[in-house]
Length: 142
Image 1 (cartoon, rainbow, N blue to C red):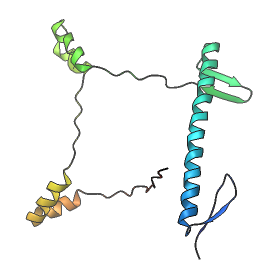
Image 2 (cartoon, rainbow, N blue to C red; image 1 turned 90 degrees about the vertical axis):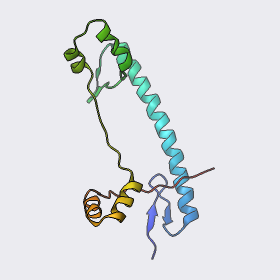
Image 3 (tube, helix red, strand yellow; image 1 turned 45 degrees about the vertical axis):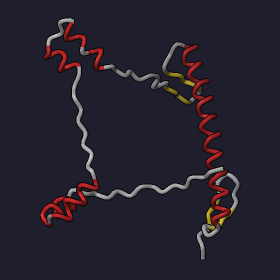
Image 4 (cartoon, one colour; image 1 turned 120 degrees about the vertical axis):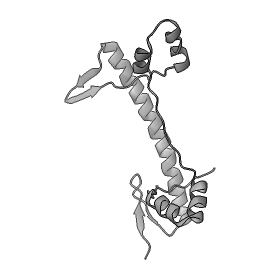
């Protein structure tokens, strides 16, 4: 017996064994998600305008309290900031202003080659790996 899925917006019952029906409902849900995101954006904008009109980041509307958060993010051009050194900024202050971040990426192809070439390497490489499941998704093209 196949699993029966209930579409919450319509109450329709669909069989998990019905790929045509599943694809149709998935497409409808994605369309609804798009509409909801657009509405959410419009509602957020309307409320942001009310926050601005009232000159506050907090609104109390009846028993509901709302806070306006976010807004903008500052992105720094470190090359321009380097000009501070020429303007006389001491190295210690520059080091406090700008810090270095390093990230590592493992080349899976090289790891496989190393593991195939040496058992000791293979054991270490095996211990260094963790497989984390990812959600699956279906791309719908119209």
